[in-house]
Length: 322
Length: 149
Image 1 (tube, rainbow over the protein chains, first blue to last red):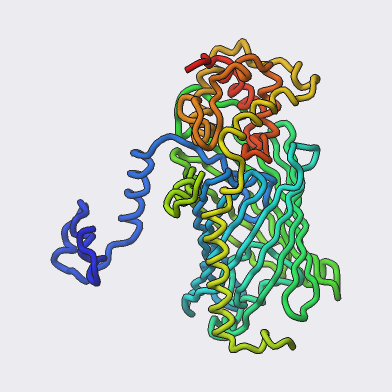
Image 2: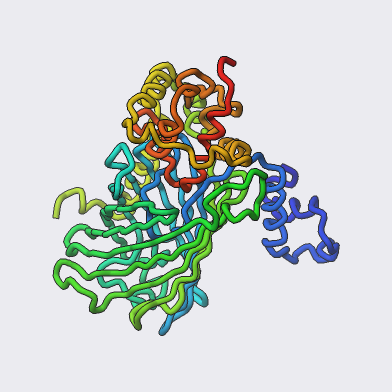
């Protein structure tokens, strides 16, 4: 690539056709990143082959569908959260989701966050597996979910709410919060069904923070529906069938020492997904806290891209026989 | 507290991260290698059509007379199915050809059932995430395919 090396970033910009050339006179001035990435994103969309990922709109809840075998889904999600008695934050994670086969999906997460007027910290990793328990579709379809988390208290992606998680947990400074690491095992039973175009899902959650914390409980429920049930015969990006809308609700249910709703937080979040061509999916979800222990607003968005046949390509790379 | 828990924190963290990356990498590289071989996969996939219960086999395609169903089904096939079954449904190493007699002779209900339930143990995922009318559009497209290519 042109301009590689230590001065790569500035050199790269010189080759881009920009609407202004003042940056040449003031080389220290940085271009807003969106100027580079937004056109790049739409260029990729324009020149990429057909293919739709057909992802669900959920961000916290899970339905019973797994990643297609051999496909790698790379996802980026952002959460902007308001914080009373503290600084607002922007937490984000990258997720690598791989379909090992038709009944097993495995995922790897990298979490980080930026607390305004404080700092940016890497907050940990998560390793997740989902196993489909029944080989056919049934009235309710169970999927077993197992996750190991190695995250610090500074983690604010709020991918799930468990036990007595409340807003004030996130009020401390990054320096203090990141000092404490958690090693958690998380189990979920994903119960999902489709009816008349609607998906309904319920995810009870059980978490054990090692070595000696009590079991914590939580839940996530959701429902979604595509805007159209029939596909149109023509290729289109804005067809109604490419959009799915819904809502999800999630919160904590206390722990084994004090089960219940007291000192717990709960959220309700409308969700929308737009399945773009070339296996891109865009999701948006403004989440609203339902009690005074919850963050007032959790605004989430995510962009994901599916690489079909990734496993096959990787096996070829490693010379694994078919 | 057990001895391994008393290791210096940076050491255990580094070991944990390396282990996670190693397991993830190995899963990616070799996870699917235990799956059925292409010939086994083909034979098993076609056999699934015959295993569909009679009640489901007898279901009629409600979009059989829809003039747009084949074109819409073809579009859906390109978007979701061609990754494994090939661009012209002629099959790849990942999925069998659908231009064969067992598919041609299968009832719309049988094709719909296999689409809905997948053939999970042989690598085909369930496709009930597509709404029911879209699955019938796919059935219309599959029934329109010529065999023997």
